[in-house]
Length: 396
Image 1 (cartoon, rainbow, N blue to C red):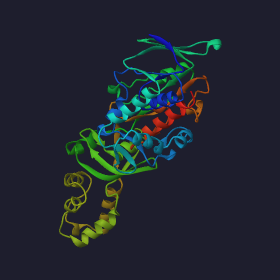
Image 2: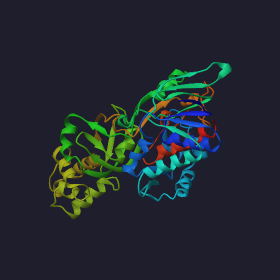
Image 3: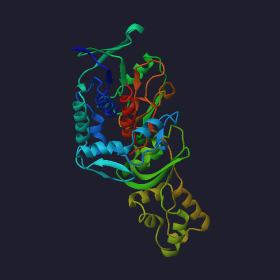
C-alpha cells in the first residue's frame, strides 16, 4: 500500500480525528495513521465510559503551559459551543454533571462514532494497527514528508503530529510525538504526569491506608493554587477530583495543605460545638461533618480527643489550625499509568498559535496533548484537542 495525500495525521485520538474531519471538509485528501487496533481509545475510557467531552466554561485560565498565552487563539476560534453543535447535529444526548462538565447520557462510543462518521463523510482515510517505522522529509525541490509504515509508504506536504503524551501506556501511549519533534529540531519541555493520584509514604500512608474508599469535600492548596472538591483516600495515598486537580501544580517536595472544613470557619464551628455540645467528644462532633472513620483517625494521630468543654481557647485555635490547614506530605504520584494527561511537551515558542504549524519546518504541525498545553480536570483537555485540531485542520 502507498499513496500521496495532502496531509498525513499521526494519531487517531481526539485531536487527530478533529483535525482530519476539519481538513477533509475543506476538500483535502487526508490519511490518519493509528498504531492501536482502534481509534479514540482515551475518548472511549473517558468519564467512566461517558466521555466528559468539553467544559462550557473553558477559558485560557484553565490551562497550564510555559506560555500561558499560546492557547488563546485556538480556544477563541473553536469554542465548546462549536463542538456541542456537532454533538447535537448527530443527535447525541448529553447532560451537565457539575462545574460546566458535559457528558454523554449513553456512551462515549457515540463521540468516536460521530468523529468517524464526519471523517467518512469528508473522505478521510483512517488506517488502524498501522505503526510508523520512520518519517523522512524530501529536499527543497520535493518538500514532502515520507511516512514509512507497516502498511506501506505514504507522502504528503503536511504532517500533523497528534499522537498524545505519555499518560496511560496501557491505552498505547508512547513518546513517539516527542521523538518526531526532536527529529525536526523542536525543543521538548520536561514532561511529567498530570491529573494523577498522589502517593503517601511512611507515617502518613500507614495512618490512612485502611481508610481506603473514604471521601470528603476539601480545599486542596499548593503553590498558591487551590481547588475545592472531593478527596478520596486510597490504599497508597489520596485521589479524587480535588487531588487530581492540584497534582498538576504539585512537585515532590512542595507543600500540600488541605482544608478539611472547606465551607466553614473551623474556629467558629469549634466554638459553636463547645457551646452546644460541651459533653460530646471532639471525634463525635467532627464525625457529624465528615466521615466518622476519618474524624476518628484525625483524633488518633493529629488532634487531641476529649469532651469539648475540656478545651481552652488556645487549644481550640490549634485544632482549628489543623482542620483548616492540614499538612499532607505526598511522596510522589501514581505516574503515567493512571495519569489523565502529560504536563510539558513540545515547546510552544516554536509553533504558530493560530495554525499549530512549526516555525522551523513548514508543513509540520503539532496538536493536542503532545504540545505543552495541559487543561484542568473536567473536559478542558478534550476542548484543547478539538480547538488545536480545528486550527491545524483549517491550516493544512
